Image (cartoon, rainbow, N blue to C red; front, top):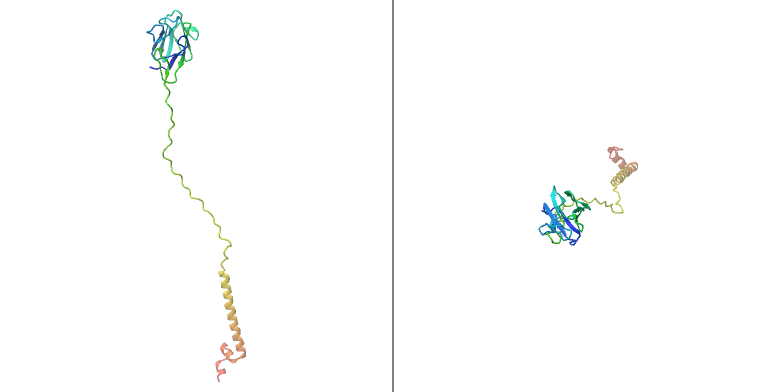
Length: 200
């Protein structure tokens, strides 16, 4: 059983040594049968007792000669302890109540051994990444080559041909009129003179 608390010797012959509170009942004294054995002339054979009640340890004196103290006050009845409290065993030994962050294994009379906490690893990134969304490129405007090609002139060409034909027809008619005016043959061709007149 590990409660997560320990007693660290702040003052006394065993200063710097830590003891885990890992039993429902823990006795402190000079006798070898105690859970925590402390050396000192003012320590009784069975001096102090810690009892776990409702998840909290309470401290009480076991009829010692020099008494048990909690934060400088003599313990006259079972009193709860909390981290940071100072427990005096007689007047020469001082124990500090500490909360242990990791799992602590302390045997009687052995130095403190604190197991390191396991490292925290960040989860790896996902192996699959979704494909990117394809967006077609915007159309590129290409201007027509310069200089620009000349506009088509279909309408003008037809108009020119039409005028030329009319002009040729007018010239032909004019020639026939002149021919008819000066020769009987021309008049016959135009129908102005009956053919019988030319050949009696």
